[in-house]
Length: 375
Image (cartoon, rainbow, N blue to C red; front, side, top):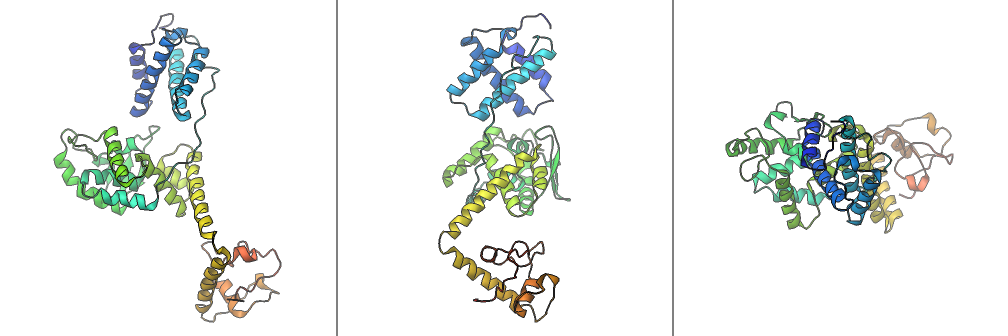
């Protein structure tokens, strides 16, 4: 194709789509083609450029500036730039143009905002409110109990669900990768009930798990409308992706390690998963600030006192000795409580960290405090 003049038009996009089919997810490719049509219109109407070989880095910079002025978000501009950059690189490989016209143009940096989260009540209400409609209920259950992406949920087939081993397989997810997701008991129950109805209702795709009103596989817009319908009833701002955010944050808050959550969500980069750690920390900090706003020290003392007294009472008179306590002034009951009552990692003396400064069993002030005094 070298030396041939190629217009910025439909034929170019047809060739590009044929080359990228299989390399990109279907939804990603569809978004890229839409973005490229938009870019072509700008080049033709604003820059008076009709052929791909005439596009320059200057035209690309003007286009990005126009996108910014038009109100496109940073993430949207980044995606559109990557679409154009992908076309540019492909055109070089095909010898349509001698050099990439995106070279030297700085890509927009994606927003690094923390994901917005549903609260527990919104999640529960979504699940319960959709029960009267089995079709809606199963769609919400799949999103809520797996954390898979919208496109992955829509592509789900019954053959991808192993009820015996309680595993749900995501086939060719983002990045063209397969992965396995544990099947939660609640989701298993919903899917088993829905399966009989789905097989009888489906028209053209009997293996599809999520179905639309017509009996065909549920569409992207159809799933969005389902979520929007209940969100409007509840008065909350929720999208299909919100369920993914919620599940990830709950798993991390409940102690799941970040690598496990990364694999479960199908993230390529662990830095993406780390956003949920920050979000969870932010929510925990907000909850702690609210709790500590009134009489915080006294609340902590009362809570710690109850826990420690319970530990002392339940020690059964067993006395323990440890080199860590040598030379300290402790009552026998306090010594026993500190030795026998431990947190999940086995660190003693975690009841009053704010008052005595004990950190994981270390006593920087040189003396183990007698926590039983004044309780």
